Length: 236
Image 1 (cartoon, one colour):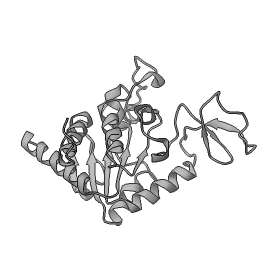
Image 2: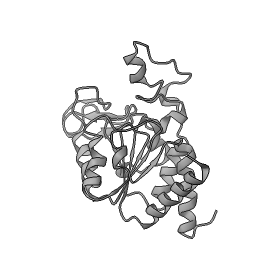
Image 3: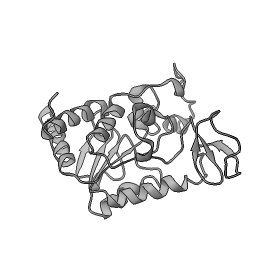
């Protein structure tokens, strides 16, 4: 695709955000690759390597030492501009909270490596800062969801609720193959939301996307924010 085509798509997404009354963002592992974390279904992703019988590629830093990148901070800008009603994430890396996303605007469907979750009431806690067990009397366990485990009920409920209300649903860095998380954009489309997908690899929902970006997230989202600010009369 040409540079002019990318510019046109960026302008279109900015215009849709400007006009939207209920934009929802959905993120997967692809948003964190620019921070140094591996994705899952990319050419060198965790599951791609596993399927080839290869071990995970060694990392120079631990997950908890990674920092947010331009994609994460662009989503924080949407929050500041009032152009993100809710953020649904498949990621466990804590980078959204680290970047400045408000906890009440975030559902972490697969948990968070820095949090504990109560097995009774489902509340999340920071380790070493809360009593064990929870005040409800139940045990605190790591919040990351393993294969075969149920997703956190509250996060799942909120995600479907906001997906249904959305008039603009933006997928960022997800292959959209893991359910029930991948059902969120389907729910949005069923309720007549525009669907935007920003992901370098193909997804099962590409045919339903109103706007599609294969370019790097860090190349797309900051430019969208810049254009959106101009439309809102906010000049940098």
